[in-house]
Image (cartoon, rainbow, N blue to C red; front, side, top):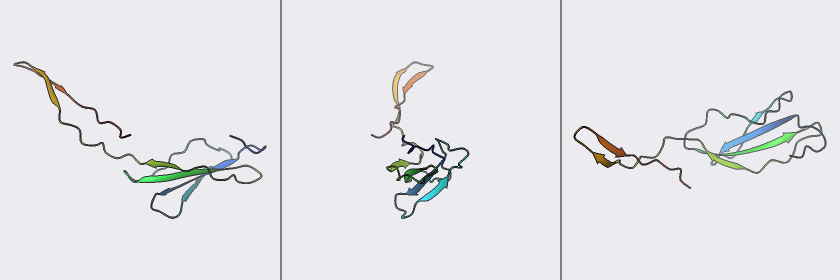
Amino acid sequence: MQNGGSPVTHYILYWKTQSAGDYLDSYTTPDQPELSYIITSLDAGVFYDIKVQAFNTVGGSEHSGVARIVAATVPAKPIAPSMLSQSSTKVCIRLVDVKVPS
């Protein structure tokens, strides 16, 4: 990342739901410009748009491109198990993993 000739002092992270008009923001402090940040209190299954802006002593950069994420939710309903083998005292069942949609 190019710093414009002066070290980055802090970032502002902006996020909003897809349907919201205005972004909320979270400021990182100048003494600790973190390169990771945890956004809390998101709603499960809701899509969010997230972008960031870097600052140095000269001013602020343009905003980054927007990342679209979805806050996690419960997994999809699994497919019914199938029997692989059986005996008089046991049964072997095959479970089908729930895949992430592509």
